[in-house]
Image (cartoon, rainbow, N blue to C red):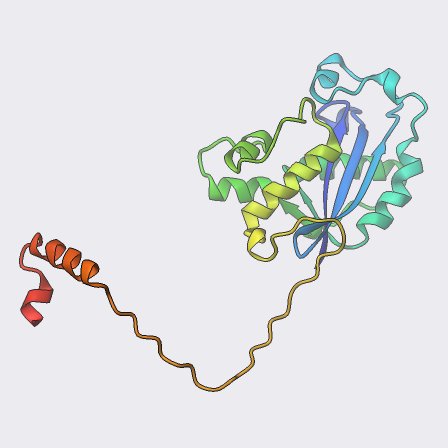
Length: 225
């Protein structure tokens, strides 16, 4: 019943060309609802960050000097995600970057059977429409006022709300308060036969109905009367 929703920020778009992870954030879901338990690390990529990437996520190379290397946070991240399913928007992108980072450490690739990609879910529900995280937030009336850049932890929190909407999760629980969310258990108790409650229309309702029927062409009600 536990899953992990996560997001990464990177130096570019291609891990095979040497782009690296510079920020990783994740939050715990229980029954697809956030519990308030999070993981967040900024990472020194050991390389430059192109200006076009900084314009997107707002993270500069100077800001990351002195931050831990991926090798120093990998064990903590693996402990946090455990063996649970992993939810992300355009998940193959994030999986590819994590695979590249883990391969440098001799760690196996993440099992693709754990992947839950919210992008195909959105495309299935809204075919032919923009399905970026911003577009989905606007469609579901989720507040975007704090999203000036692609902050990984904020993106996770926004995606969690989107994921709830995409999966109908609000029907399972209306509270997003911190702390583990327990699924309510309803037990039916028989207290004897129910007493019928007649539903009788008022005089005004009967009159309004008669006017409505009079406006119909050969109403079936008049044939059965």
